[in-house]
Length: 592
Image 1: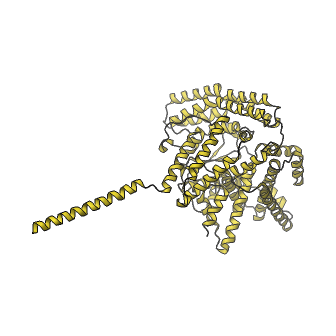
Image 2 (image 1 turned 45 degrees about the vertical axis):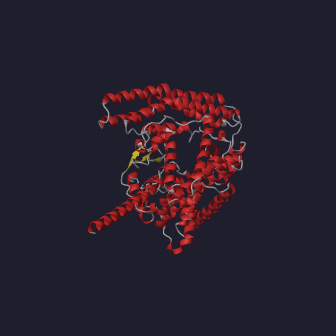
Image 3 (image 1 turned 120 degrees about the vertical axis):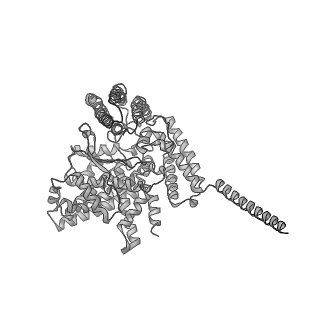
C-alpha cells in the first residue's frame, strides 16, 4: 500500500514537473516569438541610421567617434553625390522608407518613439514634397556652399585612430571626382536656365582662386601638421610615421585638392553668362514652391509665407514700440548703447564661466566642466566666424570646444552674447543636455536647424539680461541693444521672404533698407546678394527664435502664476531638436 502511494505521489510529482516545464517552455517560446512594436520600430530606425551615416564619410566621422562600436567596420569613402540619377534613387529610397514607416502603429510605441515616428513622418513627406525640382538645389555659394565649408570641415577632422588618417587621405583623393559631379550638376542647371547669376559666380570663382593661390602656406597643411605632431608627441605614432603622413598630405593637396578647386573655378568661368536670374527663387519656375520647401526642411516651420510675414511684422512693430518707449524714458540711451563695452580685462573663459553660473535659476543643471576655449589659428582667421562651437560625436559627447576668432572686430558686449549663443545656454549646453538623455541614434541625424539655431538665438536674447551685472552695463541699455539686434534680424528675415517669395528686386529691397536707416548702396547690395545666395538662412535663426517665444507665451498662458522658466526649458531640452509642429505637440501635451 505504501509502495502504491509512493508510486502515485511520484507520478503526481512527475506530472506537476512536466506541467511546469511545459508552462515554462511555452512562456519562453512566446517571449522569444513576440516582438513588441517598440522593438520593431527601433530595429527600423537603427537600420536607417546605419544606412544614412555610412553614405557620407564626413557625416560618419562627425557623428560617430568609434563607428566600430555600432557595427560599422567597412564603409565606402564618399563626400556624397550630386549625380542626378543618384538624387532620383534617393527619392525612391525615401518613398520606400516612408512605406515602411506607415506600417507601424504609433499608438503602440513609447512616448519617445512616438516623437521619433512623428519626426520621421514629417521629414519623409517634406523631402518628397519638393517634387521634380532637384535642379533648384544650389550646392555652391560664397558663404555656405560646399566649396566654402569643406576646407573647414577637413581642417577640423579629428584623428583618433590610424583609420581616421586613412579616411582623411581618401577624402582628399576623392575631391576631383566629387567636384566634377558638382560641375556636371551646374551644367544641367545652366541648360535649364537655372544657373546662378554672374555676381554669385564671380564671388565663388574669386574664393576658389584665393584658395589655390594660398597653397604655399595653406591652413589645411598647418592644421594637419599640428594634429600629426601632437600624435607623435603623445607617442601614438612614431616620428617616422608622422613625417610620412605629412608628406602624403602635401602630395594629395598638390595632386588632388588644388587641381579640384582649379577645375571648379575654370568650369564656373565657362558657365558664366548663362545665368538668367539676378534675383531670388521666386523668379525661377517652381521657385516659390521650392522656397516653401526650404522653410519647412531647414527651419522646421510649416506656416505659409504669408503667415510668417505677418508674424515678423508683428514683432517688428512690437520691438519698435519698445525701443521708442526706452528712448522717451531716457533720451541718452542710444549714446550709451553705442559706447557700451565689456571690461577690458574680461576674457572669453570668464564670460563662459559666468554664464554657466548665471543661468542656473532659469535652466536645469548640467555637468559641463569638460569644455575648452581655443583660438582660431592664424591661417584660418580670415575664413572663420567670430566664434563657433564644434559639435562633438554623439557617442562621446566630447571634446567640447568653442573657438574664438581674435581677428574679429566685434565688441566685448557682442562677444559676451555670442558666447551665450555658442556656449551657455546655447549650442554647447543644448547639445550636451540632450545628448545626456541618451536618445535613439537616429535623432542625431534628424536635427532641425530651426530648433538648433532658434534655441541659440532665443537664449542669446536672454543673455542680454544676464550680462548687465558682468558687463557693468545698465539693464535698460542691454535691453536696448537686444532690441536693435532683434530688429536687424527681423528686417533681414522680411527681406528673405520678400526676395524669395514675393519677387522683390534690389530696388525694392534698397527702399526698405533705406527706410530703416541703411542708406549706403554698397552695403545694401551686399545684404541683398547674401540673401539671394542663402535662401531661408536668416529664418533659421529668427523665425526659429520666434517659435520658442510663441511656445513660451502659450505655456505661460496655460500655467499662469505656476509657470516656471526652468521647467519650460527643461521640457524643451529633453524633447530635443525637431520640427516645430512636433515640438509644440509634445511640449503642450506635457502640460495637460
